[in-house]
Image 1 (cartoon, rainbow, N blue to C red):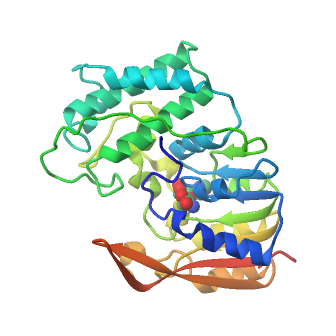
Image 2 (cartoon, rainbow, N blue to C red):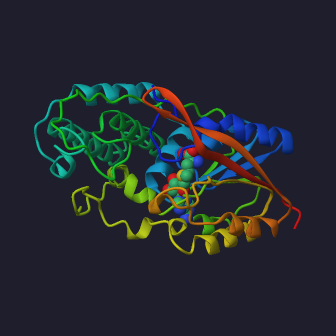
Length: 337
Ligand SMILES: C[S@@+](CC[C@H](N)C(=O)[O-])C[C@H]1O[C@@H](n2cnc3c(N)ncnc32)[C@H](O)[C@@H]1O
């Protein structure tokens, strides 16, 4: 069964959870509520999720909203029923082309697997419409499908492009995600622009992990977004992306620092933790940070004294650990103003 951390996601913070945890232990101690407002996979909020606290999750992308609901909302589901449905999916055989195979077959997936994935997606839709599964069960099946196809996708981990090669027909098998609702009683999950949501929420700790550079998450994960939404839009270009104009992030554009300042000044919280790496001008154009350190410090200092914590970022390359100049950084503010 898949755990929440078992998907490939650019900039995910799975490997620095102990680093974040240490800062919270040393600087804050006990807290009641935590908001992970740029949740992505949700691994950070998930790490702090306990029965007696409240975690607020949010992401602009719908497929992340789906997956966070699958893992972290409190609604009931029938696991035996889901296992049976997945078993039926895994045993099905069909050769009938569909939206998914027409657009993504022989590209991100073999034709055979793409037919199967499109068929399963349509079946999940039908099961829900016919009231055979509830919304939580739909979220769990969609997330299980997304996590499972990530394992066989012909990519380097995102869907900006597929690798041009002959596709071996890896036999696609769907696996269930592992989820347990016991600790999720107080959680809240949103699919909004962070700058809008910030006006409606309060929390003890606000954790911010916005995109750093011009690389749009809606480009990198268009395929999972398309599969989750299942509105079957027209797709374009070599990478077969749909029109993503409504889900582009302003944090990847020139006005990022203005939005960041607005977010910080409107936050109703006791502590702010911000992850923002230091690629700065070291990287190539696309990797350049959209908000400078000076702008970050200026915005954060308006709310209190800023401390910066750093941890070396270990790059793993061909099995060997290679240290470079990149650092994972957390900016920390105890809000006093
Ligand atoms: C660096 S990733 C977060 C990674 C996450 N901490 C994890 O460990 O998986 C940034 C996330 O911010 C989301 N995002 C970008 N702009 C946003 C906005 N204006 N409001 C809410 N979410 C946004 C992206 O979809 C992306 O998932």
